[in-house]
Length: 611
Image 1 (tube, one colour):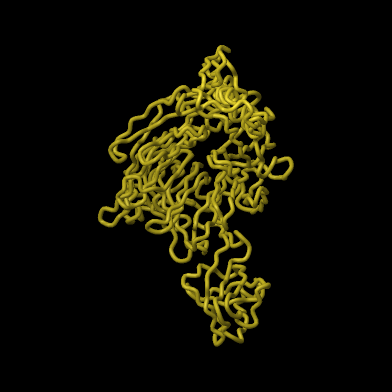
Image 2 (cartoon, rainbow, N blue to C red):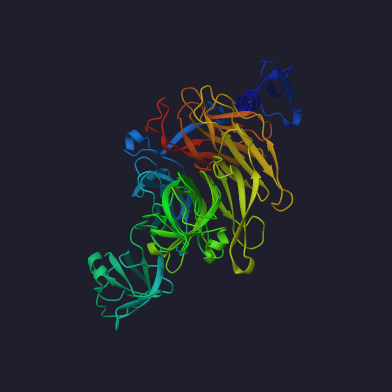
Protein backbone atom coordinates (compact mmCIF):
# COMPACT_ATOMS: atom_id res chain seq x y z
CA UNK A 1 0.00 0.00 0.00
CA UNK A 2 1.38 3.44 -0.92
CA UNK A 3 1.23 5.85 1.98
CA UNK A 4 2.55 9.24 2.96
CA UNK A 5 5.76 8.99 5.02
CA UNK A 6 5.48 12.70 5.95
CA UNK A 7 2.28 12.08 7.93
CA UNK A 8 3.71 9.13 9.81
CA UNK A 9 6.88 10.92 10.82
CA UNK A 10 5.11 14.17 11.72
CA UNK A 11 2.65 12.42 14.03
CA UNK A 12 5.47 10.62 15.79
CA UNK A 13 7.20 13.96 16.29
CA UNK A 14 4.01 15.66 17.45
CA UNK A 15 3.52 12.97 20.07
CA UNK A 16 6.82 13.95 21.67
CA UNK A 17 5.78 17.58 22.05
CA UNK A 18 2.22 17.09 23.25
CA UNK A 19 3.30 14.43 25.73
CA UNK A 20 0.70 11.82 24.86
CA UNK A 21 0.10 9.70 27.93
CA UNK A 22 -0.49 6.00 28.24
CA UNK A 23 -0.56 4.43 31.67
CA UNK A 24 0.84 7.62 33.16
CA UNK A 25 3.97 7.74 30.97
CA UNK A 26 5.36 10.22 28.43
CA UNK A 27 6.71 8.98 25.11
CA UNK A 28 6.19 8.38 21.39
CA UNK A 29 2.95 7.31 19.75
CA UNK A 30 3.39 5.75 16.28
CA UNK A 31 0.36 5.75 13.95
CA UNK A 32 -0.29 3.01 11.38
CA UNK A 33 -2.14 3.41 8.06
CA UNK A 34 -5.27 1.75 9.51
CA UNK A 35 -5.52 4.34 12.29
CA UNK A 36 -4.26 2.12 15.10
CA UNK A 37 -1.20 3.14 17.09
CA UNK A 38 1.61 1.83 19.24
CA UNK A 39 2.83 3.81 22.29
CA UNK A 40 6.47 3.64 23.37
CA UNK A 41 7.10 5.38 26.75
CA UNK A 42 10.25 7.34 27.52
CA UNK A 43 12.54 6.05 30.24
CA UNK A 44 12.11 8.32 33.30
CA UNK A 45 15.46 10.08 32.84
CA UNK A 46 14.70 10.89 29.17
CA UNK A 47 11.20 12.30 29.61
CA UNK A 48 10.92 16.07 29.01
CA UNK A 49 9.62 18.18 31.87
CA UNK A 50 5.85 18.74 31.83
CA UNK A 51 6.29 22.52 31.89
CA UNK A 52 8.86 22.58 29.04
CA UNK A 53 8.48 25.76 26.93
CA UNK A 54 6.97 25.22 23.48
CA UNK A 55 9.24 25.00 20.48
CA UNK A 56 7.72 27.50 18.04
CA UNK A 57 9.32 25.81 15.05
CA UNK A 58 7.71 22.51 15.96
CA UNK A 59 4.44 23.87 17.34
CA UNK A 60 3.80 25.79 14.09
CA UNK A 61 1.36 24.08 11.69
CA UNK A 62 3.42 21.66 9.62
CA UNK A 63 3.58 21.99 5.83
CA UNK A 64 2.02 18.90 4.32
CA UNK A 65 3.17 19.21 0.71
CA UNK A 66 6.08 20.21 -1.44
CA UNK A 67 5.49 23.84 -2.44
CA UNK A 68 6.40 25.31 -5.82
CA UNK A 69 8.59 28.43 -6.01
CA UNK A 70 8.93 30.40 -9.26
CA UNK A 71 12.34 31.62 -10.36
CA UNK A 72 11.21 33.03 -13.71
CA UNK A 73 7.67 32.69 -14.98
CA UNK A 74 4.93 31.87 -15.52
CA UNK A 75 5.11 32.23 -19.27
CA UNK A 76 1.95 34.32 -19.39
CA UNK A 77 3.64 36.90 -17.14
CA UNK A 78 7.13 37.04 -18.65
CA UNK A 79 6.22 36.81 -22.34
CA UNK A 80 8.51 33.86 -23.16
CA UNK A 81 7.40 30.38 -24.24
CA UNK A 82 8.72 26.89 -23.67
CA UNK A 83 11.11 26.61 -20.69
CA UNK A 84 12.86 23.37 -21.65
CA UNK A 85 15.51 22.41 -19.10
CA UNK A 86 17.83 23.80 -16.43
CA UNK A 87 21.48 23.96 -15.51
CA UNK A 88 22.88 25.51 -12.36
CA UNK A 89 26.25 26.84 -11.21
CA UNK A 90 27.76 29.31 -8.76
CA UNK A 91 28.96 32.46 -10.55
CA UNK A 92 30.52 35.36 -8.65
CA UNK A 93 29.47 33.63 -5.44
CA UNK A 94 25.79 33.53 -6.42
CA UNK A 95 23.53 30.66 -7.46
CA UNK A 96 22.84 31.03 -11.19
CA UNK A 97 20.25 29.02 -13.16
CA UNK A 98 20.04 28.97 -16.96
CA UNK A 99 17.15 27.66 -19.04
CA UNK A 100 16.52 27.37 -22.80
CA UNK A 101 13.10 28.55 -24.04
CA UNK A 102 12.19 26.42 -27.02
CA UNK A 103 9.27 28.21 -28.63
CA UNK A 104 10.36 31.84 -28.17
CA UNK A 105 14.09 31.25 -28.72
CA UNK A 106 15.98 32.59 -25.70
CA UNK A 107 18.20 31.51 -22.85
CA UNK A 108 17.40 33.02 -19.47
CA UNK A 109 20.09 33.60 -16.85
CA UNK A 110 18.60 33.87 -13.34
CA UNK A 111 20.82 34.99 -10.44
CA UNK A 112 19.97 34.71 -6.74
CA UNK A 113 20.99 37.67 -4.58
CA UNK A 114 19.93 37.14 -0.98
CA UNK A 115 16.38 35.84 -1.42
CA UNK A 116 15.65 37.66 -4.70
CA UNK A 117 16.01 36.30 -8.22
CA UNK A 118 16.90 38.59 -11.14
CA UNK A 119 16.79 37.33 -14.73
CA UNK A 120 18.60 38.40 -17.89
CA UNK A 121 17.29 37.31 -21.30
CA UNK A 122 19.71 36.31 -24.06
CA UNK A 123 18.55 36.05 -27.67
CA UNK A 124 19.91 32.91 -29.34
CA UNK A 125 19.06 30.25 -31.91
CA UNK A 126 15.37 29.52 -32.45
CA UNK A 127 13.79 26.47 -30.81
CA UNK A 128 16.44 25.97 -28.11
CA UNK A 129 16.43 22.41 -26.79
CA UNK A 130 19.22 22.65 -24.24
CA UNK A 131 21.53 25.08 -22.44
CA UNK A 132 24.58 24.08 -20.44
CA UNK A 133 27.35 25.87 -18.59
CA UNK A 134 30.86 25.32 -20.00
CA UNK A 135 34.15 27.21 -19.71
CA UNK A 136 34.58 27.39 -23.49
CA UNK A 137 37.67 29.61 -23.59
CA UNK A 138 39.24 28.13 -20.43
CA UNK A 139 39.53 31.53 -18.75
CA UNK A 140 38.08 30.29 -15.45
CA UNK A 141 34.66 31.84 -16.13
CA UNK A 142 31.68 29.71 -17.19
CA UNK A 143 30.14 30.37 -20.60
CA UNK A 144 26.88 28.98 -22.05
CA UNK A 145 26.25 26.45 -24.84
CA UNK A 146 22.81 26.31 -26.42
CA UNK A 147 21.38 24.95 -29.63
CA UNK A 148 18.28 24.88 -31.72
CA UNK A 149 16.16 22.87 -34.07
CA UNK A 150 13.21 23.86 -36.24
CA UNK A 151 13.70 26.95 -38.38
CA UNK A 152 17.22 27.79 -37.21
CA UNK A 153 19.48 24.78 -36.80
CA UNK A 154 22.33 26.40 -34.90
CA UNK A 155 24.71 26.02 -31.97
CA UNK A 156 25.20 29.21 -29.99
CA UNK A 157 27.90 30.12 -27.48
CA UNK A 158 27.28 32.81 -24.86
CA UNK A 159 30.74 33.99 -23.86
CA UNK A 160 30.79 35.27 -20.30
CA UNK A 161 32.64 38.09 -18.66
CA UNK A 162 36.25 37.15 -18.10
CA UNK A 163 39.00 39.17 -16.50
CA UNK A 164 42.68 39.26 -17.36
CA UNK A 165 45.50 41.47 -16.17
CA UNK A 166 47.52 43.31 -18.79
CA UNK A 167 50.60 45.47 -19.25
CA UNK A 168 50.16 48.55 -21.45
CA UNK A 169 52.77 49.99 -23.81
CA UNK A 170 52.15 53.60 -24.80
CA UNK A 171 54.78 53.47 -27.54
CA UNK A 172 52.65 51.14 -29.68
CA UNK A 173 49.21 51.45 -27.96
CA UNK A 174 49.10 47.72 -27.11
CA UNK A 175 48.10 45.72 -24.05
CA UNK A 176 49.82 42.41 -23.36
CA UNK A 177 47.89 39.57 -21.66
CA UNK A 178 48.96 35.97 -22.26
CA UNK A 179 46.23 34.03 -24.13
CA UNK A 180 43.73 36.81 -23.50
CA UNK A 181 40.97 35.06 -25.51
CA UNK A 182 39.50 38.32 -26.79
CA UNK A 183 38.32 38.89 -30.34
CA UNK A 184 37.95 42.10 -32.29
CA UNK A 185 34.74 43.87 -31.28
CA UNK A 186 34.49 42.39 -27.77
CA UNK A 187 33.26 45.02 -25.29
CA UNK A 188 35.57 45.46 -22.27
CA UNK A 189 36.00 47.68 -19.25
CA UNK A 190 39.33 48.42 -17.58
CA UNK A 191 40.19 48.86 -13.92
CA UNK A 192 43.27 49.47 -11.78
CA UNK A 193 44.54 48.66 -8.33
CA UNK A 194 47.62 50.19 -6.70
CA UNK A 195 48.24 52.85 -9.33
CA UNK A 196 46.77 54.60 -12.35
CA UNK A 197 45.25 53.44 -15.63
CA UNK A 198 47.10 54.15 -18.88
CA UNK A 199 46.03 57.61 -20.07
CA UNK A 200 43.48 58.45 -21.45
CA UNK A 201 41.61 55.29 -20.34
CA UNK A 202 38.81 55.61 -17.77
CA UNK A 203 37.33 52.99 -15.46
CA UNK A 204 33.81 54.27 -16.17
CA UNK A 205 34.01 53.91 -19.96
CA UNK A 206 33.36 50.91 -22.19
CA UNK A 207 35.93 50.11 -24.85
CA UNK A 208 36.10 47.65 -27.73
CA UNK A 209 38.89 45.20 -28.52
CA UNK A 210 41.17 45.18 -31.55
CA UNK A 211 42.78 41.74 -31.45
CA UNK A 212 46.43 42.07 -32.44
CA UNK A 213 47.61 38.52 -31.55
CA UNK A 214 46.98 35.70 -29.10
CA UNK A 215 48.79 37.70 -26.40
CA UNK A 216 48.25 41.35 -27.37
CA UNK A 217 45.33 43.65 -28.11
CA UNK A 218 44.46 47.30 -28.53
CA UNK A 219 41.37 49.27 -27.56
CA UNK A 220 38.97 51.46 -29.54
CA UNK A 221 36.34 53.93 -28.36
CA UNK A 222 33.52 52.42 -30.46
CA UNK A 223 32.65 49.08 -32.04
CA UNK A 224 32.93 50.65 -35.49
CA UNK A 225 36.42 51.92 -34.70
CA UNK A 226 37.41 48.47 -33.45
CA UNK A 227 36.26 46.82 -36.66
CA UNK A 228 38.10 49.51 -38.65
CA UNK A 229 41.30 49.03 -36.61
CA UNK A 230 41.29 52.58 -35.24
CA UNK A 231 42.96 52.27 -31.84
CA UNK A 232 43.10 54.66 -28.89
CA UNK A 233 46.41 56.52 -28.68
CA UNK A 234 47.86 55.75 -25.25
CA UNK A 235 49.92 58.56 -23.72
CA UNK A 236 51.18 56.63 -20.67
CA UNK A 237 51.78 53.01 -19.64
CA UNK A 238 49.92 53.35 -16.36
CA UNK A 239 51.06 51.97 -12.99
CA UNK A 240 49.93 49.25 -10.60
CA UNK A 241 47.80 46.29 -11.72
CA UNK A 242 45.68 46.78 -14.83
CA UNK A 243 42.66 44.54 -15.53
CA UNK A 244 40.40 44.19 -18.58
CA UNK A 245 36.97 42.57 -18.18
CA UNK A 246 34.64 41.50 -20.99
CA UNK A 247 31.87 44.08 -20.70
CA UNK A 248 28.43 42.68 -19.88
CA UNK A 249 28.00 39.05 -18.89
CA UNK A 250 27.51 36.77 -21.93
CA UNK A 251 27.79 39.74 -24.31
CA UNK A 252 30.47 38.24 -26.57
CA UNK A 253 28.17 35.66 -28.17
CA UNK A 254 28.24 33.94 -31.55
CA UNK A 255 27.05 30.92 -33.52
CA UNK A 256 29.45 28.10 -34.39
CA UNK A 257 29.74 28.19 -38.17
CA UNK A 258 30.32 24.43 -38.51
CA UNK A 259 27.00 23.65 -36.76
CA UNK A 260 24.69 25.43 -39.18
CA UNK A 261 22.15 23.10 -40.83
CA UNK A 262 24.11 19.95 -39.91
CA UNK A 263 21.31 18.52 -37.77
CA UNK A 264 18.72 19.62 -35.23
CA UNK A 265 20.73 20.11 -32.03
CA UNK A 266 19.30 18.65 -28.83
CA UNK A 267 21.74 18.11 -25.97
CA UNK A 268 25.21 19.30 -24.91
CA UNK A 269 27.99 18.82 -22.40
CA UNK A 270 31.66 19.72 -22.45
CA UNK A 271 35.04 18.49 -21.22
CA UNK A 272 38.45 20.15 -21.13
CA UNK A 273 40.78 17.15 -20.61
CA UNK A 274 42.94 16.76 -23.72
CA UNK A 275 41.52 19.97 -25.20
CA UNK A 276 38.03 21.43 -25.20
CA UNK A 277 35.31 19.18 -26.61
CA UNK A 278 31.68 20.29 -26.83
CA UNK A 279 29.72 17.03 -26.90
CA UNK A 280 26.45 17.20 -28.79
CA UNK A 281 23.91 15.43 -30.91
CA UNK A 282 20.37 15.81 -32.10
CA UNK A 283 17.90 14.55 -34.62
CA UNK A 284 16.95 15.24 -38.23
CA UNK A 285 17.42 13.06 -41.27
CA UNK A 286 18.75 14.70 -44.39
CA UNK A 287 17.73 13.08 -47.67
CA UNK A 288 19.53 14.16 -50.87
CA UNK A 289 19.52 12.83 -54.41
CA UNK A 290 22.88 12.54 -56.12
CA UNK A 291 24.60 11.64 -59.35
CA UNK A 292 27.75 9.51 -59.32
CA UNK A 293 30.89 9.62 -61.43
CA UNK A 294 32.96 6.44 -61.54
CA UNK A 295 35.79 8.31 -63.25
CA UNK A 296 36.37 10.48 -60.15
CA UNK A 297 34.68 8.32 -57.46
CA UNK A 298 32.54 11.34 -56.55
CA UNK A 299 28.89 11.95 -55.76
CA UNK A 300 27.37 15.31 -56.64
CA UNK A 301 24.51 17.02 -54.78
CA UNK A 302 23.96 20.77 -54.83
CA UNK A 303 24.50 22.15 -51.29
CA UNK A 304 24.62 18.70 -49.70
CA UNK A 305 25.63 20.03 -46.21
CA UNK A 306 27.44 16.76 -45.37
CA UNK A 307 30.71 16.81 -43.41
CA UNK A 308 33.57 14.33 -43.39
CA UNK A 309 32.73 11.21 -41.35
CA UNK A 310 28.96 11.71 -41.58
CA UNK A 311 27.23 8.33 -41.82
CA UNK A 312 24.78 7.87 -44.69
CA UNK A 313 22.84 5.13 -46.43
CA UNK A 314 22.24 4.99 -50.18
CA UNK A 315 19.15 3.73 -52.03
CA UNK A 316 17.95 3.60 -55.63
CA UNK A 317 14.69 3.72 -57.51
CA UNK A 318 14.20 2.96 -61.20
CA UNK A 319 17.68 1.58 -61.81
CA UNK A 320 20.86 0.41 -60.08
CA UNK A 321 23.21 1.90 -57.50
CA UNK A 322 26.77 2.79 -58.52
CA UNK A 323 28.85 -0.36 -58.10
CA UNK A 324 29.98 -1.58 -55.54
CA UNK A 325 27.57 0.36 -53.29
CA UNK A 326 24.91 -1.70 -51.50
CA UNK A 327 21.51 -0.35 -50.48
CA UNK A 328 20.90 0.37 -46.77
CA UNK A 329 24.57 -0.11 -45.86
CA UNK A 330 26.25 2.60 -43.78
CA UNK A 331 28.95 4.55 -45.62
CA UNK A 332 30.97 7.52 -44.44
CA UNK A 333 31.34 10.87 -46.16
CA UNK A 334 34.60 12.37 -47.43
CA UNK A 335 33.63 15.99 -48.08
CA UNK A 336 35.26 17.51 -51.18
CA UNK A 337 33.36 20.81 -51.36
CA UNK A 338 29.85 22.20 -50.91
CA UNK A 339 28.51 20.16 -53.82
CA UNK A 340 30.66 17.00 -54.07
CA UNK A 341 31.79 14.21 -51.79
CA UNK A 342 33.12 10.68 -51.82
CA UNK A 343 32.26 7.65 -49.70
CA UNK A 344 34.39 5.43 -47.47
CA UNK A 345 33.66 2.04 -45.91
CA UNK A 346 34.63 3.11 -42.38
CA UNK A 347 34.82 6.30 -40.37
CA UNK A 348 38.61 5.90 -40.06
CA UNK A 349 38.90 5.61 -43.84
CA UNK A 350 36.79 8.74 -44.25
CA UNK A 351 39.07 10.71 -41.97
CA UNK A 352 42.11 9.32 -43.79
CA UNK A 353 40.55 10.20 -47.18
CA UNK A 354 40.48 6.60 -48.42
CA UNK A 355 37.51 6.53 -50.78
CA UNK A 356 35.54 3.66 -52.31
CA UNK A 357 36.51 3.02 -55.94
CA UNK A 358 33.30 3.31 -57.96
CA UNK A 359 33.20 1.07 -61.01
CA UNK A 360 29.92 2.37 -62.48
CA UNK A 361 27.82 5.54 -62.37
CA UNK A 362 24.58 3.73 -61.62
CA UNK A 363 21.20 4.39 -63.20
CA UNK A 364 17.83 5.72 -62.10
CA UNK A 365 17.38 7.99 -59.08
CA UNK A 366 20.10 7.76 -56.43
CA UNK A 367 19.37 8.89 -52.88
CA UNK A 368 21.66 9.46 -49.89
CA UNK A 369 20.08 9.58 -46.43
CA UNK A 370 22.11 10.98 -43.60
CA UNK A 371 21.31 10.08 -40.02
CA UNK A 372 21.97 12.65 -37.31
CA UNK A 373 24.99 11.84 -35.20
CA UNK A 374 26.48 12.04 -31.75
CA UNK A 375 29.91 13.63 -31.66
CA UNK A 376 31.78 16.73 -30.60
CA UNK A 377 32.98 20.15 -31.68
CA UNK A 378 36.68 20.87 -31.46
CA UNK A 379 38.47 24.10 -32.26
CA UNK A 380 41.80 25.17 -33.70
CA UNK A 381 42.96 28.59 -32.57
CA UNK A 382 40.88 30.92 -30.42
CA UNK A 383 37.62 29.36 -29.18
CA UNK A 384 36.05 32.82 -29.56
CA UNK A 385 36.24 32.72 -33.37
CA UNK A 386 33.09 31.20 -34.95
CA UNK A 387 34.93 29.66 -37.90
CA UNK A 388 37.55 27.88 -35.76
CA UNK A 389 35.27 24.94 -34.91
CA UNK A 390 34.96 21.55 -36.59
CA UNK A 391 32.19 18.97 -36.05
CA UNK A 392 33.49 15.43 -35.46
CA UNK A 393 30.68 12.83 -35.74
CA UNK A 394 31.15 9.58 -33.82
CA UNK A 395 28.11 7.44 -34.67
CA UNK A 396 24.73 7.66 -36.37
CA UNK A 397 21.75 8.12 -34.05
CA UNK A 398 18.00 8.54 -34.31
CA UNK A 399 17.26 11.11 -31.57
CA UNK A 400 19.77 11.99 -28.88
CA UNK A 401 18.40 12.50 -25.36
CA UNK A 402 21.53 12.55 -23.17
CA UNK A 403 25.24 13.00 -23.92
CA UNK A 404 27.96 13.05 -21.27
CA UNK A 405 31.70 13.21 -21.93
CA UNK A 406 33.63 11.30 -19.26
CA UNK A 407 36.67 9.03 -18.91
CA UNK A 408 34.53 6.13 -17.76
CA UNK A 409 37.13 3.38 -18.15
CA UNK A 410 39.97 5.29 -16.49
CA UNK A 411 42.44 5.07 -19.38
CA UNK A 412 43.17 8.79 -19.48
CA UNK A 413 41.05 9.86 -22.47
CA UNK A 414 37.45 11.08 -22.62
CA UNK A 415 34.75 8.62 -23.67
CA UNK A 416 31.07 9.48 -24.22
CA UNK A 417 27.90 8.09 -22.61
CA UNK A 418 24.58 8.69 -24.38
CA UNK A 419 20.98 7.61 -24.82
CA UNK A 420 19.12 7.27 -28.15
CA UNK A 421 15.36 7.61 -27.92
CA UNK A 422 14.39 5.57 -30.98
CA UNK A 423 15.62 2.59 -33.00
CA UNK A 424 16.28 3.74 -36.59
CA UNK A 425 20.06 3.93 -36.12
CA UNK A 426 20.22 0.57 -34.36
CA UNK A 427 21.43 1.85 -30.98
CA UNK A 428 18.20 2.61 -29.10
CA UNK A 429 18.88 2.58 -25.38
CA UNK A 430 21.91 3.59 -23.33
CA UNK A 431 25.40 3.23 -24.78
CA UNK A 432 28.95 4.34 -24.27
CA UNK A 433 31.58 4.90 -26.92
CA UNK A 434 35.15 4.05 -26.04
CA UNK A 435 37.87 6.21 -27.49
CA UNK A 436 41.15 4.60 -28.54
CA UNK A 437 43.94 5.90 -30.75
CA UNK A 438 45.56 2.96 -32.56
CA UNK A 439 48.28 4.23 -34.83
CA UNK A 440 47.40 7.78 -33.89
CA UNK A 441 43.92 7.52 -35.48
CA UNK A 442 41.02 8.43 -33.20
CA UNK A 443 38.66 5.41 -33.12
CA UNK A 444 35.33 4.98 -31.35
CA UNK A 445 33.90 1.60 -30.31
CA UNK A 446 30.29 1.30 -29.22
CA UNK A 447 29.36 -0.66 -26.08
CA UNK A 448 25.68 -1.20 -25.32
CA UNK A 449 24.66 -0.62 -21.70
CA UNK A 450 20.92 -1.32 -21.98
CA UNK A 451 18.92 -2.08 -25.12
CA UNK A 452 15.18 -2.16 -24.36
CA UNK A 453 12.98 -4.83 -25.92
CA UNK A 454 10.43 -3.77 -28.49
CA UNK A 455 7.38 -2.21 -26.92
CA UNK A 456 8.99 -1.12 -23.68
CA UNK A 457 8.78 2.58 -24.55
CA UNK A 458 10.88 5.55 -25.59
CA UNK A 459 14.29 5.97 -23.99
CA UNK A 460 14.67 9.32 -22.24
CA UNK A 461 17.32 10.99 -20.05
CA UNK A 462 20.02 8.91 -18.41
CA UNK A 463 21.99 9.63 -15.26
CA UNK A 464 25.46 8.50 -14.18
CA UNK A 465 25.40 7.44 -10.52
CA UNK A 466 28.88 7.07 -9.07
CA UNK A 467 31.44 5.28 -11.21
CA UNK A 468 29.55 2.06 -11.95
CA UNK A 469 25.82 2.75 -12.35
CA UNK A 470 23.62 4.20 -15.10
CA UNK A 471 19.95 4.99 -14.53
CA UNK A 472 17.51 5.69 -17.36
CA UNK A 473 13.77 6.15 -17.62
CA UNK A 474 11.49 4.96 -20.42
CA UNK A 475 8.05 6.34 -21.20
CA UNK A 476 5.57 5.79 -24.01
CA UNK A 477 4.30 9.17 -25.16
CA UNK A 478 0.93 10.85 -24.79
CA UNK A 479 -1.14 7.74 -24.17
CA UNK A 480 -4.53 7.69 -22.52
CA UNK A 481 -4.66 5.91 -20.20
CA UNK A 482 -0.93 6.36 -19.50
CA UNK A 483 1.28 3.50 -20.67
CA UNK A 484 3.61 1.98 -18.06
CA UNK A 485 6.80 3.86 -17.25
CA UNK A 486 10.07 2.13 -16.45
CA UNK A 487 13.09 3.02 -14.30
CA UNK A 488 16.12 0.94 -15.25
CA UNK A 489 19.31 0.58 -13.25
CA UNK A 490 22.40 -0.79 -15.03
CA UNK A 491 25.44 -1.79 -12.97
CA UNK A 492 28.94 -2.84 -14.06
CA UNK A 493 31.50 -4.62 -11.91
CA UNK A 494 34.29 -4.95 -14.51
CA UNK A 495 35.22 -1.39 -15.53
CA UNK A 496 32.32 -0.81 -17.94
CA UNK A 497 32.91 -4.02 -19.93
CA UNK A 498 29.63 -5.81 -19.12
CA UNK A 499 26.37 -4.66 -17.57
CA UNK A 500 23.52 -6.10 -15.54
CA UNK A 501 20.24 -4.19 -15.83
CA UNK A 502 17.31 -4.48 -13.46
CA UNK A 503 13.91 -2.80 -13.27
CA UNK A 504 13.54 -0.58 -10.21
CA UNK A 505 10.10 -1.31 -8.78
CA UNK A 506 7.57 -0.24 -7.87
CA UNK A 507 7.54 2.71 -10.24
CA UNK A 508 6.15 5.59 -8.16
CA UNK A 509 2.45 6.22 -8.88
CA UNK A 510 2.46 3.90 -11.91
CA UNK A 511 -0.49 4.80 -14.13
CA UNK A 512 -1.00 8.11 -12.31
CA UNK A 513 1.78 10.14 -13.96
CA UNK A 514 2.63 11.41 -17.40
CA UNK A 515 5.35 9.61 -19.33
CA UNK A 516 8.83 9.55 -17.81
CA UNK A 517 11.31 12.26 -18.79
CA UNK A 518 14.36 12.49 -16.48
CA UNK A 519 15.67 10.87 -13.29
CA UNK A 520 18.01 12.27 -10.65
CA UNK A 521 19.41 10.38 -7.67
CA UNK A 522 19.61 12.29 -4.38
CA UNK A 523 18.72 11.95 -0.71
CA UNK A 524 15.60 14.11 -0.41
CA UNK A 525 14.42 12.27 2.72
CA UNK A 526 17.63 12.96 4.64
CA UNK A 527 18.04 9.38 5.85
CA UNK A 528 21.43 8.80 4.19
CA UNK A 529 19.95 6.54 1.48
CA UNK A 530 19.62 7.71 -2.11
CA UNK A 531 16.13 8.34 -3.47
CA UNK A 532 15.15 8.87 -7.14
CA UNK A 533 13.24 11.94 -8.36
CA UNK A 534 11.57 11.61 -11.79
CA UNK A 535 9.98 14.27 -14.01
CA UNK A 536 7.26 13.58 -16.59
CA UNK A 537 5.57 15.02 -19.67
CA UNK A 538 1.96 14.53 -20.69
CA UNK A 539 0.85 15.02 -17.09
CA UNK A 540 -2.57 16.40 -17.96
CA UNK A 541 -5.39 16.87 -15.48
CA UNK A 542 -4.78 14.98 -12.25
CA UNK A 543 -1.74 13.10 -13.56
CA UNK A 544 1.41 13.76 -11.55
CA UNK A 545 4.36 15.56 -13.12
CA UNK A 546 7.14 15.21 -10.51
CA UNK A 547 7.39 12.22 -8.18
CA UNK A 548 10.05 10.36 -6.24
CA UNK A 549 10.83 6.86 -5.01
CA UNK A 550 12.07 6.54 -1.42
CA UNK A 551 15.28 4.52 -1.62
CA UNK A 552 14.83 3.03 1.85
CA UNK A 553 11.13 2.15 1.93
CA UNK A 554 10.30 2.15 -1.82
CA UNK A 555 7.34 4.38 -1.01
CA UNK A 556 6.06 6.85 -3.62
CA UNK A 557 6.55 10.54 -2.80
CA UNK A 558 4.27 13.08 -4.49
CA UNK A 559 6.19 16.29 -5.29
CA UNK A 560 3.89 17.92 -7.86
CA UNK A 561 0.47 16.39 -8.39
CA UNK A 562 -1.19 18.65 -10.93
CA UNK A 563 0.57 22.01 -11.47
CA UNK A 564 2.24 21.37 -14.82
CA UNK A 565 2.18 19.07 -17.85
CA UNK A 566 5.66 18.88 -19.42
CA UNK A 567 8.67 18.88 -17.13
CA UNK A 568 12.21 18.36 -18.36
CA UNK A 569 15.68 17.96 -16.87
CA UNK A 570 15.88 18.01 -13.07
CA UNK A 571 18.43 18.80 -10.36
CA UNK A 572 18.56 18.26 -6.59
CA UNK A 573 20.18 20.95 -4.46
CA UNK A 574 19.51 23.03 -1.37
CA UNK A 575 17.78 26.03 -2.95
CA UNK A 576 16.84 27.81 0.29
CA UNK A 577 19.81 27.03 2.54
CA UNK A 578 17.80 25.10 5.12
CA UNK A 579 19.95 21.97 4.98
CA UNK A 580 17.79 19.65 2.90
CA UNK A 581 17.65 18.96 -0.84
CA UNK A 582 15.01 20.66 -2.95
CA UNK A 583 14.07 19.92 -6.59
CA UNK A 584 14.94 22.33 -9.45
CA UNK A 585 13.33 21.91 -12.87
CA UNK A 586 11.38 23.69 -15.60
CA UNK A 587 7.86 23.29 -16.98
CA UNK A 588 7.05 24.00 -20.59
CA UNK A 589 3.32 23.78 -21.32
CA UNK A 590 1.21 24.31 -18.22
CA UNK A 591 -1.61 22.00 -17.23
CA UNK A 592 -4.19 23.32 -19.68
CA UNK A 593 -5.06 19.98 -21.26
CA UNK A 594 -4.03 21.32 -24.66
CA UNK A 595 -0.24 21.22 -24.62
CA UNK A 596 -0.18 24.94 -25.46
CA UNK A 597 2.76 27.07 -24.40
CA UNK A 598 1.40 28.49 -21.16
CA UNK A 599 3.96 26.89 -18.91
CA UNK A 600 5.15 27.53 -15.39
CA UNK A 601 8.69 28.49 -16.47
CA UNK A 602 11.77 27.94 -14.31
CA UNK A 603 10.70 26.61 -10.92
CA UNK A 604 11.76 24.66 -7.86
CA UNK A 605 9.92 22.63 -5.24
CA UNK A 606 10.63 23.26 -1.56
CA UNK A 607 11.27 20.14 0.50
CA UNK A 608 8.78 20.07 3.43
CA UNK A 609 11.46 18.50 5.70
CA UNK A 610 9.03 16.11 7.36
CA UNK A 611 10.49 12.81 6.29
